[in-house]
Length: 376
Image (cartoon, rainbow, N blue to C red; front, side, top):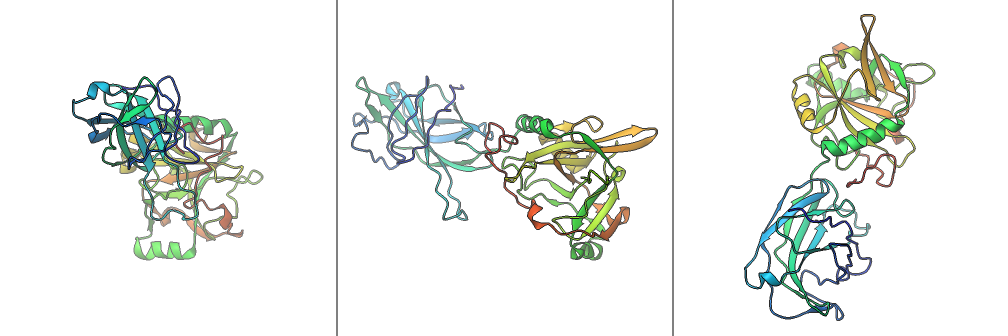
């Protein structure tokens, strides 16, 4: 059974023993910590023991919600009026030691039939490990609470963005995509050593690799989808690819029709920025029926290749014509190997602008243009 959202949980700026939550389904109280330590004015009474939750189970996990249930003895069960839930991000051994620790979130809900849903995008983030413990409580006529001991601590990890969340990102990206410009080639910049290695060790074919963790933290393609990154942006005044690149001075160019055609599917992957005015859109091109296509079909919104705001392939006068959005930077992932013999490799004349690299770049969580109302 789903209960009213626990959306009014407040992170205490002082002590985890002083969380206050108030809503139609939540009441203002003060909590003790997991060790049972209470402040002198906590208002929690010590009376007959309440049953301690055990065998906690977490289910129906999304990027910003989960269901929780547990077992408990029937003794004094009818006296339970509330549940106290202690939710914390699991500590990361590699976290920045100078960064402030996340303040634990204490949730209070009226006792309802289990399982109950915990939902809240400002205290739950996607792809994040949490610990959770539970107390049962009984509110007295004078406002004091009788509480049980804390349950055992359970660990779980929230999920990636669903197609619903990605569709929300897609709609926000469409707003700023701008007009469409014509292009004819996809290109990929790397160092000379990269292309030498491809020729020597991979039979002259670039191989898909796992996408890094750049972009939205909840993106289902980060760290999972295998592909090869390409660009297709052109300079407004020349209609050709720019001569500068953050990824290397050597560029592989391939005719657009060899990667993007009626035998491929197009998917929306992500929308993000890196504390800058310009925004990035990640698209995925996958040959129909390929492993990459099956991966994307289950997780990403599919785009109409002939009619969308970002990248199109249309037949005109018997030829395929291509356009890309002007006002966003497109990062295109192709999910199959690509032979160097299908295009050309040449040195660019411009500069290597390392500051524009998006490798493992983190999304700006405060940007109103590219964030949605779930974990960042």
